[in-house]
Length: 235
Image (tube, rainbow, N blue to C red; front, side, top):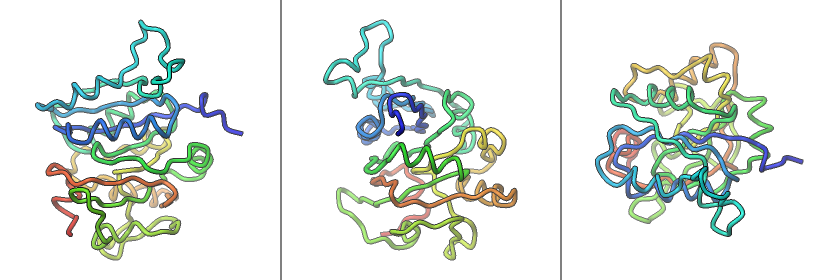
């Protein structure tokens, strides 16, 4: 039986002016996972993003808040800054600073709904990556899954291949990785987007496998800064 208090996991969340959803994202992680490490990789936010993030920091100078009823609202949270941003560079910075071998990449405007740490811990021993289901939410309304969202079906798929994009498909809004593999095969820092798909191509060429598992699930909320919505997503 997995000891959830001893199983260590790191969440990497990239931010740039994410004050609308980042607090919801972090709280949803804390509601599902006991005291994870959370690394915020921030790209020059000018709104209240970092102020909100700091509300969730555990202060080591104080008594352990986990003994208090509100203890699950605090955790080991660090802020990393990146000025010359690309998705790959931000993620690689997070991986470099992660303390744990299980690494979860999650969007700052996603709300985690389903996450079984015991299942993830077992599956990541077999797969280089496990990415999860997304529920697209537009101004509070759940959307019919079309276009890019049609990839997020209700059954597991090994090494998902997108007919829509004509390539392997991983999506980093909610994806679990083996840190050792990410250090060996980092994300391409020159790409301005779709670093996850190019990474999928690279690892499959190296005879590694990945899994889409809908038992991992997040709501993916609309934001003006969200590349999935601006470039790929259509209502």
